Each structure stands twice: as C-alpha cells, then as structure tokens.
Length: 179
Image (tube, rainbow, N blue to C red; front, top):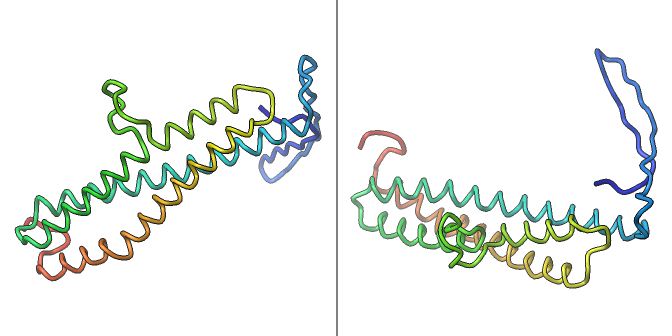
C-alpha cells in the first residue's frame, strides 16, 4: 500500500535515465483522511524497524549459542565449561523473550517480541486508518522490552563474553583445530 500523492519513477538502462511523474489517487470508497494514511504508513515503518532490530538480536544470539556450544563440548577446563553454560543459559533466556522457540509445538508458550511486532504489523496493515492509541502504546511497551534486551546483549558482550574469551585464551587451546 502506498499513500496517495505524487511520485516519480526512474528507469536507467545502459547509462540513460528516464524519469516520469505519476499520481496515486485515493481509493474513492474510503473516507480516510490523508493524514491518517500517512500516520499508518509511518507506524508501519517504525514496526518494520523494530522487527529488523529483533531479527538482528535473534541472529546474533543464535550465532553466539552455536559458538558457546562448541566450547562446552571442546573444553575440559572446568572454568571455561562453567562460564559457557552460564552464558548459554543467558542467551537461551533472551532468545525465548525474542521469539517463540517452541512454535512447532502446541501454543502453550508465550509469544516472543518477534511475534508480537508481527501481530501489530498485521493489525496496522490490515486497515485503512491511523493506528489507534492502544496500538501505539503496545508498540512503545514492546520497544522498551527490545531495548532492554539489546542493552543486555551489549552488556554481555562487554563483560561476560569478553571474560569468556580470555578464559579460552588462558587454556592454550587453539581457536580452530582438532584438540
């Protein structure tokens, strides 16, 4: 969906560009004011940003879990294994807040932030009016939860993950190898 208005399209082929202007007219069946459609678009763009940030955090955590699992299996050093298990528990807890990791099973588990942001997108995108106050309140609440998890991930990176890397280095084990 696009907000009614005047737009330009540019086509470039072999270094030659052509630009045309066109108008998108409002749906004549709707009585929604232009400002409401702009508010809807802006809200959807905010939600897409939150989903992108959520996906970035999920991907980072899943990569970290994979790396830590490697060290749990590989290291015979108690300190490294203990730190790895502690970090792994933190990451799995955070992942559970970000996404429903049990989604293939029954809906007995709470939805993660990813599913909640997606539900807001579906709600806002499935209408022809400005998002209601309640949707903005839910978005603000979910954004605070996302920011808390992003900050927690950053704090883990600066503290426990850095310490874990130092513990690994102190064992003398090579970063890659058959040890």
